[in-house]
Image (tube, rainbow, N blue to C red; front, side):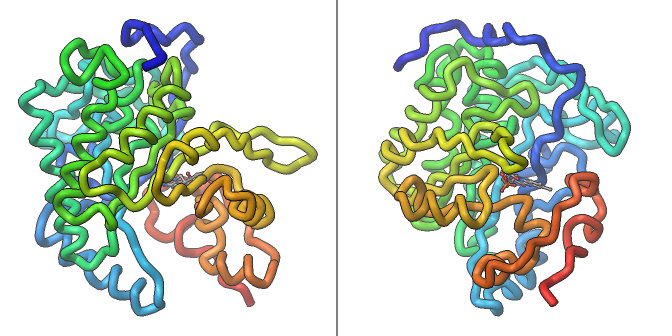
Length: 332
Ligand SMILES: Cc1cc2nc3c(=O)[nH]c(=O)nc-3n(C[C@H](O)[C@H](O)[C@H](O)COP(=O)(O)O)c2cc1C
């Protein structure tokens, strides 16, 4: 263990006046996991059934599909409707800075700090959701341990102020994440499980005083999950710009070397840079976010080295199911 500091003390930097919108949504593992937004879930049989035609349509095209499982934890607006579950987290502290959502500033709700006895129930929610996802036909699940949501609220010392076995040391900060991964891998088999981490990100007041130590610890510990896992998917630190191009910081090599399974890098890549890093062995695979969103036929365009549609940042993260999601044109 390399970092030696008390939890909750890494807030030396000036907090921003609003919280940046974190990438969303994945698929909820319980009602509490959703916050109060109209996002998909997979914790009931009915939801699992509803996924089946989606999964079948993907398989019919010869592709594979993993379901990304999340729990938002304390990322829930203050004005949640009556009857929605109280947000829970590693901490009882809300996210301090409001976020701007569709032009409105939104303050965050105060979460209930999960008791140790309650944590097992949340781990079980992930397990059950993974079972439902696989029963619905998904090829596997990706556990969302990134971007300021519940798992990161445990992983990172700006959010985790616990002093029990889930806090106050690197080993303990990582305990919840590893319990979730182990339970899910036991349930559906490690070959169906991926994990996404963003150690360098600072979404939703979730940052870490020593992201390198955190990433290295997690990459190493994931090798020891009894059933193994299929892949580790890690987000690059924020990219810079030079000569009008995005420059990927490429700081994930130590974790790629520490982790013994398939390693996926994401964040700022394009066709050229993606091919380059896979060719060099820096990553086994590269994932694309915004380019895929704006180009429904991205693999074909990459193959042909065709021109790409430009993404429209204004329609990211809106609740419209079509605009900004399924209305970008195909080639030709
Ligand atoms: C509209 C939008 C929605 C996203 N949703 C998710 C999500 O549900 N889960 C997740 O882990 N990342 C999500 N992301 C982040 C992307 O997966 C990716 O990490 C990010 O866009 C950086 O990669 P890129 O430079 O290739 O875009 C989302 C990004 C965008 C733009």
